[in-house]
Image 1 (cartoon, rainbow, N blue to C red):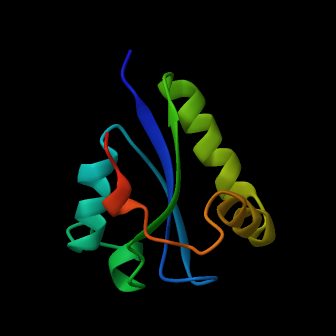
Image 2: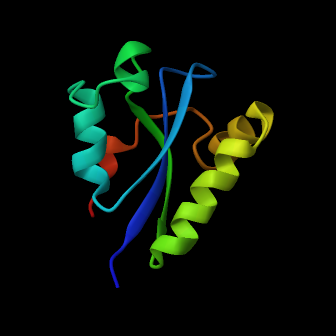
Image 3: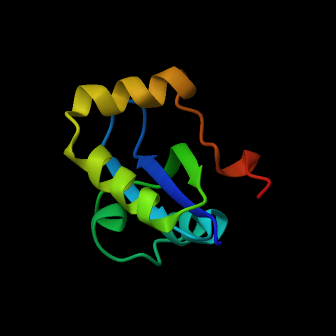
Length: 96
């Protein structure tokens, strides 16, 4: 079974937030950083990886992404700060 990732990007601390899903986290975040992913993230300079979670079942990952997108902004910020209180860019720490 392939690994999937649900991830949250931000423009900065308490800035614009984007939630996505991918099967290759390093490649996908790099695409956002290089602005190869046209649309929302490029338009609002959202490229800082502030949260991610790994799932072994794509169906569960898709459900989780949809659920997170429905959450109030306050809950999303609390999730990020529980795991990454200083909103560090986690991209450089990836060893996947």
